[in-house]
Length: 216
Image 1 (tube, rainbow, N blue to C red):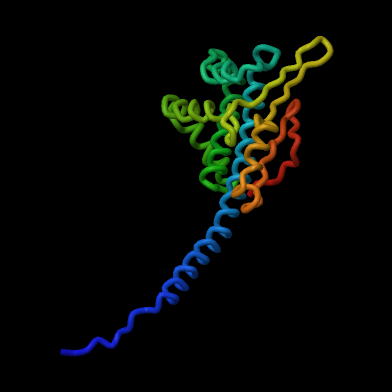
Image 2: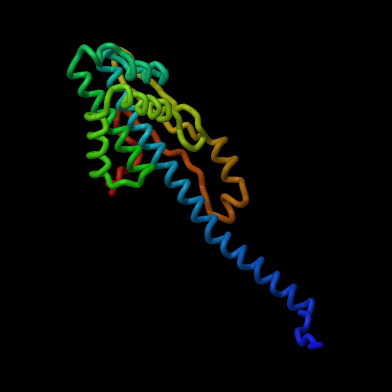
């Protein structure tokens, strides 16, 4: 009968291997987690700012008919979706289609990682070629989503200035000091990953508070 020549591993060797595995896991986590945090922060900032710009575009369409802006986003979106002016006025219909193209373009850039030119061409084709039923079903879902900031999922803050002296519109990111303090106090997010939640800015009468960079 052959005699086994294998020897059991010393206990110290097993412990050493476990320590190595743990250290490898920690190393991978410390590289992967910060990258994930910053990717999400950058994406949320981009989405938030794109949505604020589309909210402004919707408010402009609303202003064309009523001569004022609205601080109720649900009313603005309902107007863009269903107002009869878009079926009776060809100019307003064309303006709304341009607005729809921008929404589709943002979606293709932000979620499908598509280059701006290709996204714009694809969006134009979708809006111009798709039947109203299919087109509006998709557009309506997009309109419902752009009214809320992606980070805290609260509606954008709308301030309407409507006086005899001035008329204006301010659209603000809904992230406030409480949100920032809460998120930035988290150890893994702030200390380990170096993450820092910030307000994403505002649009005042069409002018964004951030420097716009050319998208690829």
